[in-house]
Amino acid sequence: MTILVRPRARASWSPHAVEIAGLSVRYPGPGSVLALEGLDLAVAAGSFHAILGPSGCGKSTLLKVLGGLVRATAGEWRIAGGRRPAYVPQGNSCFPWLTAEANVAYGLWVQGRPRRERRAVARALLASLGLQEFAESYPHQLSEGMRQRVAIARAFAVNAPLLIMDEPLSALDFQTKIQVQGELLRLWSDRQATVLYVTHDIDEALTLADRVSVLSGRPGRLLGTIEVPFPRPRSYRDVRNQPGYPDAFRQLFELLEERSA
Amino acid sequence: MQAQAVRTVAAGVLLPASLLVLWQVAAERGWIDALFFPRPTDIVARTWEHVRDGRIVTDSEITLKRLLLGFVLGAAPGIVLGLAAGTTRFIRALLYPLASALYVVPRIALLPLALVTFSIGDPARVFMVAFGVFFITFFGSLSAAEQVERNHVDTARAFGASYHQVMRSVIVPGASPSIFTSLRVAMGVALIVIISVEFLASNSGLGSFIWRRYQIFDFPSMYSGIVAVTVLGVAINALLLMLERSLLPWRR
Ligand SMILES: Nc1ncnc2c1ncn2[C@@H]1O[C@H](COP(=O)(O)OP(=O)(O)OP(=O)(O)O)[C@@H](O)[C@H]1O
Ligand SMILES: [Mg+2]
Image 1 (spheres, rainbow over the protein chains, first blue to last red):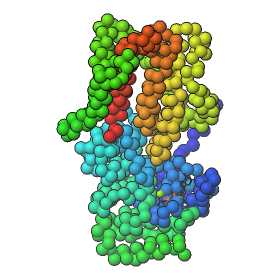
Image 2: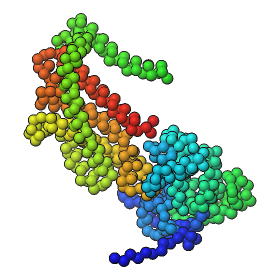
Image 3: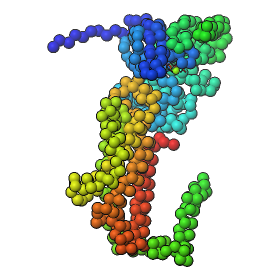
């Protein structure tokens, strides 16, 4: 038997970490719902790309397609390099029966990595998020903000080139949110990863992202993408003082309003 | 904190203690027939005699052995098949109809069948316990597996977990609190089954102990058998709770 070995496409060959063309998703069943329809999207490699859209427009569905959890009904999508993205699901996704450390190491456990490596990676990530003292704590012993940090650390632990995050900071109070935003940006730039980030908060999108795409109401389609030209490193506070801020805010606001028109 | 715990225990003891005192007084004053309702102090004395002459201890051991053997033989396949049916459509379709039909058969109605199948003896009694325990843990584990949070299963799958990894890292731990609940229910049923079976088809064990004393109208001894069953049940339940606490440290 002859085995043909083909060279794999490499992420660096493509300017795009993710390409999506004409993506439609219909949830089957009696109350069949068309969640996404003909969605086009390109995410530049190494960028922080935010997705805004009204509730129920299919943002989570989009990430679930990329995460291999939901099948596309029509259209095509491709992740450069073909590696599984690291996923921060919407809501409380920490496993209650695992300690913070074991939660962070979960993806490495799935990959069958040795215990020492799992432990070292998880400890380092927890420390970089200020959670070193809570490695042995169970999720119910942590605050909401700590749990979200654990979920973020769990995604970074597998060192995937692409991370997909579904409103990871939406449950946090204002101050915690700003703090975790900073930690998230630092991890992202250290790893030189690509992040596709769902949020419903315009200011958060403008603080974090290089580009922001806005989806229409259900079924979700792409209404437009804007560039966020603010220099980095950024913080929630100085982004608002950027000369381009009012204009960017207005553009996103208007795109979001379009859904009702 | 300490005082709170003392008060909780005191509140729990209050009702049974008052009932016992009432019983004692009623028996002494002749308000109730002392033949059927002997004084609690007499029951305690009789129980102590049976403990010292070893009869009640031997019968407790026999009942405990049958109970635990039947419990394990019923619960182990019940949990495994229940989890499999709760996570695999085909296995569910295969097992659910038959299991639902068998579940509603009153368990004691199967005793004659068990006796002829296994001939007389412990296997038949152990089977009766196992049969009752199996269905409770099967349905308990099935619905426990189905109710594991979707978000957790999805998270595991998104990280690339295989069926076995999802099973081990999400379904089993996620379902285990409900499985433990069904184990406690099953233990209650197992106790009823083994005592009933020993009433009808055994010369040994606590059920037989109680039944024979009843037939010769030795009511104080009959009550001491009931005391032994109660002690057994409470002890096993406490053991299950301890096991649950140590296996599920993440529960509040
Ligand atoms: N498993 C499912 N089965 C059927 N319909 C679903 C399922 N999941 C989502 N939907 C439907 O698909 C649509 C899009 O859902 P999705 O969760 O992707 O929205 P979303 O944009 O993430 O909303 P939110 O901002 O509230 O999180 C909704 O109308 C929802 O009811
Ligand atoms: Mg969502």
